[in-house]
Amino acid sequence: LKLVPAAGKLEVRVKGPNVTPGYYQRDDLTRAAFDDEGFYRIGDAVTFADPADPTQGIVFDGRVAEDFKLSSGTWVSVGRVRVRLIAACNPIVQDAVIAGHDRDEIGALVFLSPAAQGMTPEAIREKLAAGLRALAAEGAGSSTRPARLLVMREPPSIDANEITDKGYINQRAVLEKRAALVGTLYAGGEDVVR
Image (tube, rainbow, N blue to C red):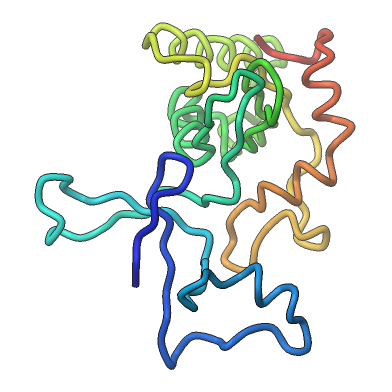
């Protein structure tokens, strides 16, 4: 195991007899998946549980591959933004997909939780707007919070690979499948919560 600085995070890389030697008959994928020392790039990032004492272990810190830069060149830590957004909109947001690659600000496609059932659209909109205001009031920069949201009417699809085998949302697949909705998110309009 080694930890490599990548986009402001520590990327996990592994090597050993228990790690695949590469992709079957795909030298191009194998070259991209391994570094020059033969370590497999798993795509996960970690942080130290206690930065002053590395012996306390490491904690998952999102996926390196999910992170992106805003048009300002500032990195967005998708995992952190997602968790903060869900917490700020508790209990009505079950999950969110963070967008904004090469854009001026972060946006999110949100999936409502069962707690939103029975709420009027106006009440849902106000709860989401209040969550955005609470994040903005924390004073953090634009790379740490969404400025706009769009509620997804269709849940994430397992068949479309929007949900991983482990039951997590597949950020990339959702953004690709719902590219038109990302366009709507940034075009504005009455459906977008700000």
